[in-house]
Length: 403
Image 1 (tube, rainbow, N blue to C red):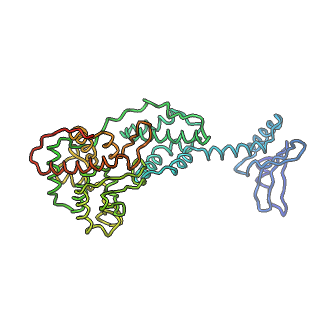
Image 2: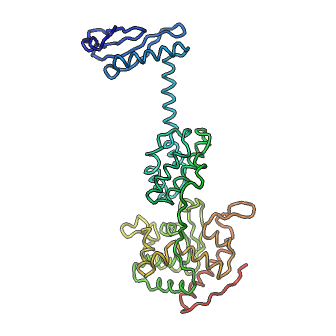
Image 3: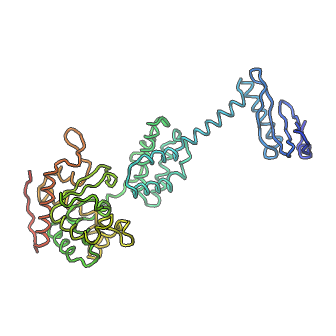
């Protein structure tokens, strides 16, 4: 019988040495001095060997315990070597099917704008992966996802918690579709997280107040490029990110069109913005300043980058409009409200021009040229209306129906 003392005193020889313990267990001492536990056994009439670990990391008692467990498997008709390979393969499969691996696989397939992709990557990397990223996706439970959401809630990130859970749910649906999970436990969390207070982008919807804002923009004494961006924000009511990423190559001033590619749009569909004569005039005035570069509104530090995402809001603050009065995104709500409630344009024309996910009566998504003649008239009418508001001291709202 082996003892720890005998093992420690054994010196390497010119050939491998074997020190037997019994029951097939022995310690093999290499000429280099390494000591490896092995188990010799027979299965289906064939002699096999199984490595049990290196001494002294695996001591004599541990090696004997491993031997005994292996012999119990043999008694049950199971090959210990095959069992180990199966367990290792299962562990590898579990790692390959971890939530983080599948989430990153799913994220790589998304065609989002870059700044949103960075935001989602940060959410997942900071709030999800450290806690459940290593878990096999098929074993995750609703309480585990709830713990992730509650942790975000505890620091006041209510909206982010809901968005992260929405993303986790999409990852789980992808896991189901690709055969790595059978159900989506995130769906069980409906109503479990605190509902964040509803937030709206501050916007001016009173025509008289809008006239005052337009006069303030006309008299803006800051950067000329920023003033042009303010004017076009009111005229075109696109999303602020779409405006500041506008490129001269996308704009056809002769045709009066701005064709925004799908990659820049929130809904990942190309969008066509009819340009009223007033908008074209602003762009023609701006072209000598920025027309040699890529962006219509280049950044102040580098013409190879677009204008800062805070430039328009900063200009509004400089003109005296606080965050509770008007925002860059608020120009969309301004146009949406007045075009409908004051000017009486059809809601589907307005919604399509806002690049919202509108559909026709048959459930088909409208394409970029849907209602184009009507939208051209609407955008021209909106530009004329803004001119009238800017010139007039007091505006009496009127309503007319547009067919």
